[in-house]
Image 1 (cartoon, rainbow, N blue to C red):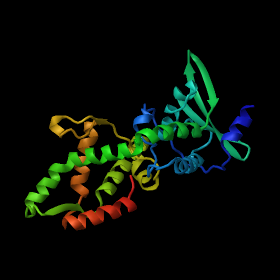
Image 2: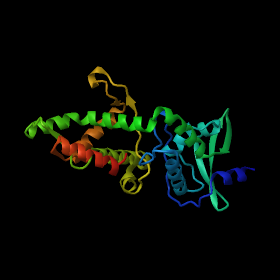
Image 3: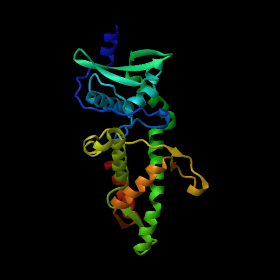
Length: 260
């Protein structure tokens, strides 16, 4: 019976790629699925998760941000409270089993990520969660480095009719920084090679509501991460003057080319 259930959920032939992470509680309704780029619809999310699952290794304890996100949206207690997950061979395909300790008893169950997709995108229709997260992220990350922009403006003629522009797009700087942060969390000292090869998972950040001091903009909750972001931007950002029309035109193209 269990074998039949697994076969109905998963039918891809997997590839092997080691990916293990420590447990991290996620409020999934406040965060988009931690894939890069964030899928904009249910079909794209399903395709990306199938490709992601195919790369997970077999018969090893797994605890990645993506699996935690799926578990947080599930309705099975064993999945929600799982200590880890295991990918197992089933015929020519594979299945995922959640392992939990509930009432001092070890429990396990097969589960499908598609239920979580249904739950998430059902909520997203009403709340536009992924776009909310991207908007808050952009605002919070810009606010952290605004003093650097202001300093560059003062030191380069202070032209009020011109916009300060990132030569390498700001959204790409944020993406690269969060990819490194995600790799550091998952791989420790071996993060560098993984940051170059792992395109799927970015570090997810949490926000605090804005205050009068932040002009009611969202702020980064993790202040150590905020300090690392300021240092990263100071080192890697290259700025230039653009007319407002040029900056607006460039921004529209970037939104098509670079996605968080």
